[in-house]
Amino acid sequence: MKDAHKSAGRAHARRDHPAPLRPPLEVNTVTQARYIRFQGTTRSPHGHFPGIFALANGLARDGRLSEEQYRFWRAGNDWYDTHYANPSDTDPLVYDRQRNPCAVAWFKTTATHLIERVDGYLHLLAAHGVPYERLESADPGRIIYEDDDQVVVVPRG
Image (spheres, one colour):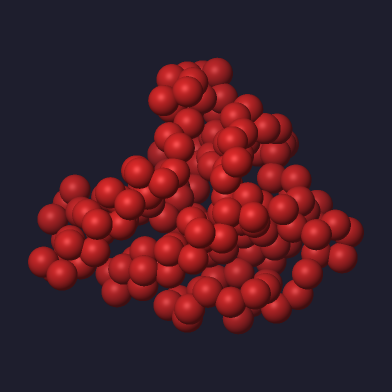
């Protein structure tokens, strides 16, 4: 497993293919990570790294999921839709590319009820050879939206 630090040591990236979630191998020595993000490793045409939900939605949209995988994806998305606020419902411009370029969502580390369910999405991506990484940060960027479980940020720099 290879570790990489981003944003002057503020974000810690780990590639997990498809190992179950577990605590990070090392803790940021400057400050404790307060946010976690799971994302693809290839930048989108819009300049950001798509999150795992967008990647899984793409597999479903493209018809690449088996029947069993599709049932998991549909049930998982329905659960998240019920238990996880959509920032765009509160602020329709939160992901506007002109206003907030490269805006992305991060889980708060306290949102364990949401993070625990991510594992199935990671296995789904791994089954289709879609690389992803787990990022942890105390300061992922300029916060433009926040609720009890997540922040949406525009990365610095």
